[in-house]
Image 1: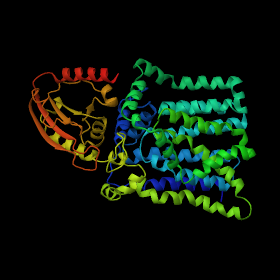
Image 2: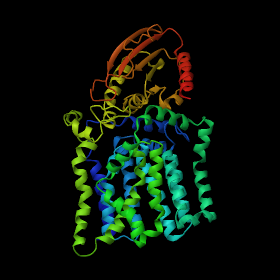
Image 3: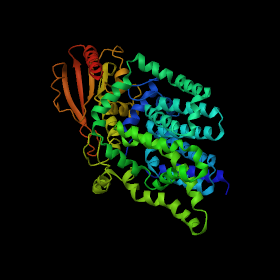
Image 4: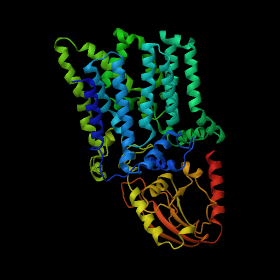
Length: 509
């Protein structure tokens, strides 16, 4: 069978798997709503992420903003990662078995899980893999254009997620330890560096103009989330991501010293450990390192093919191909939103054993955090819509939410295109136009953690404050998020919100 037919088969398999691994009870994820709303506010940077995701969101909006397209693009990024792994094997001289082995390993891995969400992570893995692929091609051909492709991969990756900077930190010292160090005396290397810098320059300028919100975001992230990260847990979780094909990664690392065709790429041996070491030192979240692994599946597949080619060892190829699939099958109902929330709660111990119930707060909860973040949003939007339809003075009514998930979900699901829910959380604080109209009424969506159920702070400011409903899905992370109608402002709500915005920005900085 021609190799291209095989590649097409694996591509179709990956697309098909994703449409079987999602239960219809789940909405989109909290972060997906924020990313989708960025399409309405295109810029060279955001408080939460660099601009690449907003470009994809704009394309999704042009295509109709349906759930199909929201799900399509992360799957596409996963498919492109698969193609790059395949092409890497071809570059390394691998045959049909090595190609199939690498394809099976990448499909039946954590990448399958990663590609179910519209977040920067899928593109992050793609750009890591593209960068490594371009560098491998350069080492093989000594053609400087591949350095330019590597610069392009880094630049786009940087504009997608700053996480790719760790890739550069990991590979540069590794190059110094091998014969590949001669790259540092070639002018084309510095031309490529300059090209990469020019590509990311608009975002760097945006960061400068806006007082580098990335550092503020990192400080907040370290204070609220990374403080709960344990370095040993980080290393343990690395074993889970590709555990069905971990033997390939180990085989690849050994192959740099035992298999002559891989010796020219020995810099990747040191890259592996330098990169993991940097992530560990900075107490990164475990999934930040996923982009490191796909290329090592290629190295491992090529070396394994050379080992399993004679006598009875040849028949171990079938076992090797089956292992990633067999390893993932028992986890399908645990790591993918296949079962309903009620079914997950019944089988809670299986999730707990894999540390999947541990949220960013460091505590265990009934559902994995990603699953809980995919519940309650359409319910919230429907209730806000119903309330909005009852308000007589719509022209002077603002829908104000405590967090970005609430605002984004209302904007996505609402039947009323004029609705633009806002928040002082994440990027929404930069999108609020408090001079657009005089605010006399608020539809207020309260965060579940807010203990002021009676809205004592707002009652003196409005003529009436009424409780109108709440998110009732007990499995949702937004469970008990309450909705209030605040009517007849006695003072300027615009001025109050402007003051609150100034305080919020000051506190955030």
